[in-house]
Image (cartoon, rainbow, N blue to C red):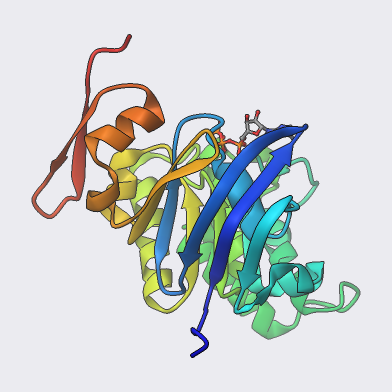
Length: 262
Ligand SMILES: Nc1ncnc2c1ncn2[C@@H]1O[C@H](COP(=O)(O)OP(=O)(O)OP(=O)(O)O)[C@@H](O)[C@H]1O
């Protein structure tokens, strides 16, 4: 029987950057309807893995399938209709207002030379509302705070209306309230069938909201699954090089106590 494969299926993926392996033998399946968080220390390979999922980084060895087909069969426009991408450092140098910047998300769906149809305008306003930026829609990007710019990048991705969202440290620059609001929004999007994959550094935020976490170290996958099954003292120490003691809280995910630093 042929297994039904949805989302991404990675089989022993190895990737090199600058002649050095940055992902080694990574195998996993990312299914729709889940919020998945990639964790690990600086340089562990999280962004590289996210770029592989987006089709932005060639795979030296192994196989990446998306919706049961090799991902490489999709061209850039097809990928942009399937996956919205928020980079770790989005380009905010464009001389655009917030609304114009968010409208970039509609490009994969239309001819750039046609005016924005009314339905697109509604989508954009909804996306801006989801990240609480509607009151700033006519403000130039150059005059936004760091957190407001980050939310503009998220609005652009939401406006793209893709089945999948790939977000590299989407909580960068966000205050506490907006970090939690964003995680709740991502959880809600996953509940409606979207595939959401993000990179985070905050273990407690990841454990509280993610359906699944992936723990990476030196380009290898140490674990993939429910946060409480993966974020255990042994793998955490291997991944972060510090003693981390997890505690399962009541209704609020997990807490992590950091031991003495060497
Ligand atoms: N453009 C590049 N050329 C060569 N090597 C790169 C490039 N980008 C990243 N690397 C290397 O690939 C490895 C993995 O980097 P990656 O960006 O995937 O890590 P990360 O887990 O996302 O780290 P961080 O938490 O610091 O963002 C690192 O050793 C890094 O130095």
